[in-house]
Image 1 (spheres, rainbow, N blue to C red):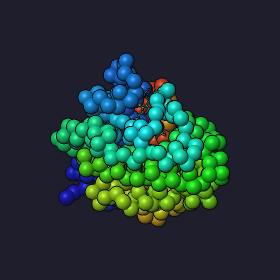
Image 2 (tube, rainbow, N blue to C red):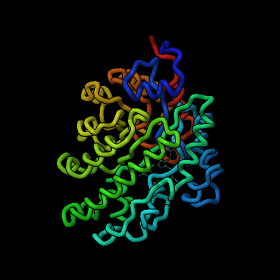
Image 3 (spheres, rainbow, N blue to C red):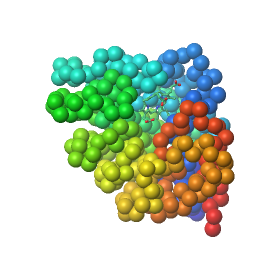
Image 4 (cartoon, rainbow, N blue to C red):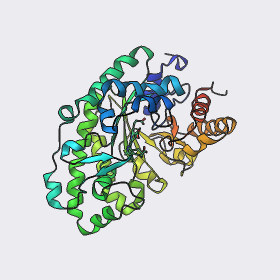
Length: 348
Ligand code: CP3
């Protein structure tokens, strides 16, 4: 098979596995969302969790970025907190997750269930199955995802998003066994949730560890790295490659390369060419344009995307993406300039 005749799914999966491709595929983290007027129109009048449960609407907004902004993969519309209420945690979105009773004690962790997502959030898998059927003819790859245990625990302990997560860091020192028990339950939930997404048709899955970059290497080695390795080891990665994203983590890059993931998604705080060198062919890379660049003129976006494509060629495989999610208020034109430059004929 010639590399030039690759369909979108083959190009994506081959890039994840470090096999030869004609050019790198492109998608954007948080590609469905508030920057799109078409998303806001569908979302209108529904609470965020009800929106995530509405199969027809979730399918619609998952597909929107394909034609509206030209991405080459679809990520299922959901949230990292969707499988969590069934553990016995009351939460709301305002707009980020807010936990009614933050988890601070051994008794609270003890009381948490490890639910079977196929039973408690069946709509997630119905959305995936519907998307997979819709995308079959277009050969577009479908991604599932989960929040990593540390990031989920960060919100559950703190009670909401935070810059420094003081309660979480206090628990690491004052009640490490409580945090450890919480991380164990979350790890089991994440494995079950990702497995079920692969079974429902996800071609690949991404693990989001947005807050693990808070930690220094010693703490990361103790509190984060083992759960990534466990998740990677338990997933059927031959069926669906695993992408690991840790935000703000140039100092932890070598750990992520050793996580067992197929692809490491990096942000703009690390030089992509340097990341490619340090990866030494062990993983593919994803990223890493600063989402703030999408406010730049289209010519500058194109220039930066071309530089990113060039740097990515030193990696075993590369998936073009941002270094974090699309920010609310991002001009749609900037997103289109990004995907257009990513899809342009590779320079000889
Ligand atoms: O990428 C996609 O398009 C798929 C959907 C997706 C959402 N959340 C939808 C969403 C994904 C992959 C996520 C992941 C997520 N959610 C993460 C990890 C990645 C990251 O961005 O760091 C985290 C930490 C969350 C938790 C969360 N959910 C926060 C902090 C917020 C509010 C702030 C924000 O960035 O929007 C949410 C709400 C949320 N999740 C929205 C969307 C589209 C906004 C809801 C709305 O329409 O008001």
